[in-house]
Length: 216
Image 1 (cartoon, one colour):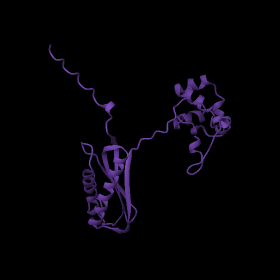
Image 2 (tube, one colour; image 1 turned 135 degrees about the horizontal axis):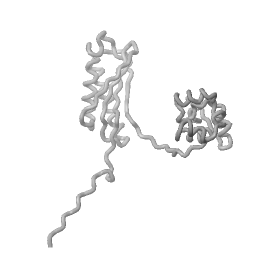
Image 3 (cartoon, rainbow, N blue to C red; image 1 turned 120 degrees about the vertical axis):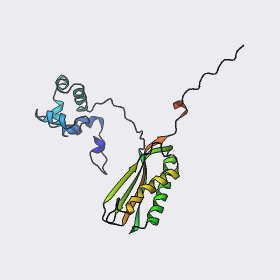
Image 4 (tube, rainbow, N blue to C red; image 1 turned 60 degrees about the vertical axis):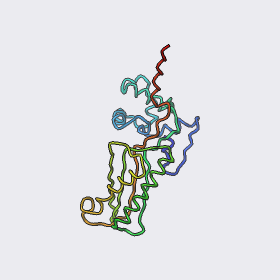
């Protein structure tokens, strides 16, 4: 809750002794786990702030909402046993480029598409991924209309050449009536790799088969 309190550039520090004073004035929807339905049910009972929610007994909330009611009771008091982790797994890698001049020259656009694909593949390998499942291109026209097209082959894309080829194929329709019937010039293109795959670790591999005993 504190991390969202002064977005996008603010920083909020809530000391332990100030937790309740920080929470009480906030609307109940700020509590993780209270969605539109729970919010409506509570508001129908005259409960709109966390301070008003905190007045309710644990048993009452459990009767109304079951197990999630117990979570409301504790979170209204700043209590949660959910683990905190700073681990973050990248979901995609992408690059984009805005042209100095809008263009519909295939040789220019496709060459930059290949270069972006090479940069994307180098970045995902540097981040420890060996392949990915979906390639996406983004095209922004001179009138700022932006379109994205994706492809997910049966086999993961595991080479730079394969990504360049898919990006090339996805960009081609933007030069004719398939994706660009009015012949608008292109302002920006982007290439993105999605659903990234890491190399399997030794622990993920199947255990070796036991060796056959030699006959005596």
